[in-house]
Image (cartoon, rainbow, N blue to C red; front, side):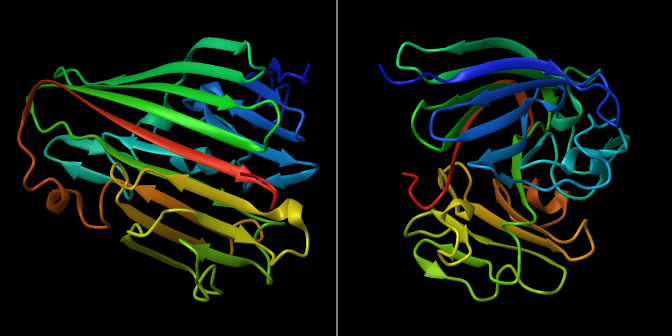
Length: 295
């Protein structure tokens, strides 16, 4: 019988993350991931056969507090949204923090289990609301197969409104640092090499997600097959692809960010939105795989 995944629930002891919850999942393919329930079940550091994936700055993996969203950018994945994305903005009397409110919220973990086929499943719900009756609720399901270096993230997001503009805005902030990000890094998007990425200067730009496929690969050209990272996502749900580069951030930061909206001011993005009375739902899915032998 094939070896099953292994699950452990832990807490940090000391440092900036002191007391924060951690769910560690491992499988027989050599993949280990750290899930962060106190950051809406985001993904911390991932290791594939000893090679780490993700970026860690001076703030570590500490849960963010309002006004300190920079703290939540550590790790491989930071979920941005769902009331707002990108730079802070004001809308009337309301202030929207950097990248929205969801990563500032602690998750209620509802499921941590190994399924009959040996896969690991972790599920959680995260809620955010306003006094005017607006609310956003994230239902997240993270799965790992027992024998492949692959993570699947399935999100169902519900928004409720009472006569106000209540959008669902999503940006999945995927952060790569050393050793994936180095002078010999190669970036391929939908089978096309991108010599402009990851680049040597700071930048942020957004482009339409490729129509002929959305598989993104970051590698060192095959020198070390463990260092290959792949990302796929649903272009219909996430039609834009943003890239972000910071040369001074902890030895270098390169971000791949599938998103629902183009890079424009909030007012322009929501100009044609109609007030929401009732509820609306959207679904998003990401699949991340590791190593050149991953499917």
